[in-house]
Structures are given as structure tokens and as C-alpha cells.
Length: 156
Image (cartoon, rainbow, N blue to C red; front, side):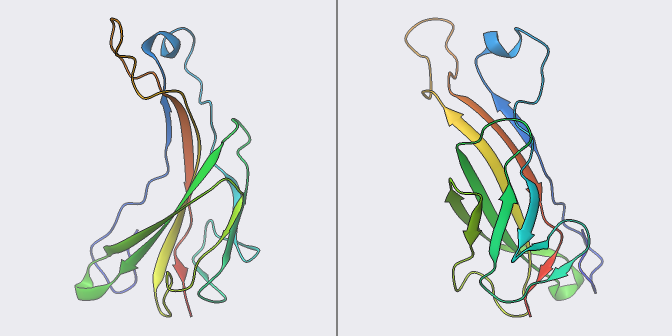
């Protein structure tokens, strides 16, 4: 992604991940257990695809649960970008954790004139951290996650 007036770019990535015991990872064909959240919106307007100008500094970010998987937590990361000096630069990130499928951006996070993206991750975290009482030693926490990243969002 390159902001207007810049020659450098920043990479924005959506991802899916799976963490489980080696035995369960290789017991069957690997299939994504979690798909990304669907239909992300800011105040009811779609935020995928073309850049969007938000209505204000405290939008309601909402989404539909993934088509695959059952998340027990969502991580919403708002990233601010700058076009200063002719280079696209990531300035700051704010993270919000929720079990709901919407979150109101708190006052003070978005600034007038700012350029942002919203990264929504659906995750299912369960289990303990490590199995260290007998061999083989491995991480036994089970987790699945998948994310979606918005288009560039500008605050008026």
C-alpha cells in the first residue's frame, strides 16, 4: 500500500494461523479451522476495497462472525499511517479485545486528517500453555485465528 504523495510503501497482511499439538496437526489433512471475520463495516459502511472517509472519530466497527470456526475472542487493531517525507510509514497501533462482533472506537484513538486501517482477527484460544511434564515437550495450547484488513480509512 502506498499513500498519496509517497514513493515508499507499507505491506498490510491478512493471515490465518493454527496452533496445536504435533499429533493433532498431522493426524489429518490440514484444513483451515477458522476463516476471517466477514463484512467488516464502519458505521454501517463497508471498509473493504476502495478507500473510505469515515463519518467521525469514534466509528462503530462491526463484522459478521467467520463462516468457519467458532471464535471466543476478537482482536481489533487500528493502525495509523503517515505520508511524511514521501514515504508511507506506520505510526502507531491501538488494540482492542472483545468477545462481541462490534466495538466503538474510543475517543482520542482517531484524529482528524489521519489515515488508518482496521485489522480484525477472529481467534479461538483454549488449553494450557505448555506440556512440560513428559516427553515429548511441546506447546499444548490450541488456537485458531484468521484476520481481515480494511482499506485505507481517512478521518475528516
